Length: 224
Image (tube, rainbow, N blue to C red; front, side, top):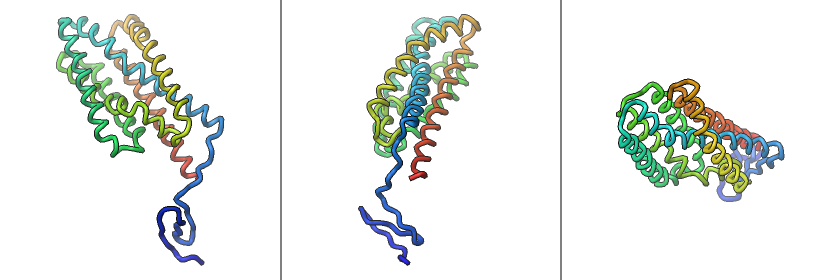
């Protein structure tokens, strides 16, 4: 019986008599799994595109309807963009520390954005809108900073180009449909509350889809 040993590089590791190689041969992606993963990713990014662009479209009109000046509407969008740049820079600086966990970082950020939009649905003060824009801008930073790199994590470096293409197309669909759908919701309900809750729902769908992709990746590791 082989005694327990530990080695490095390409040598084997034996623990409790069971050999294990660091160069694990993961099972290949089947055609069905590729289709499902691309479909889940498309839904996630379509929802993200909807939720990302909608505040920039709906906030100015929302503030004007509340009785605030147009200059205030311009200022809150400036805060959204400025803090967004700060959040993106911060996420880029710590990128090496979260390498391999970008999907998890996106999951955490999307959770914060979901809570932020639920709170915004019931807030009408100008201060609350500034806080909403600051929080939204900052937590969208990790998503923007890891815009391309996250595709490398989904399938362990495989099918990066098709995943990125799926991301680009799906984001465009969400960004195109979002403003029209938000306007329709506003016209039907007569309130912006439902619009913010729809944004929160989209972030919730992104969380669910990303969680499924993470679980699928972990399951593949277990199978290997």
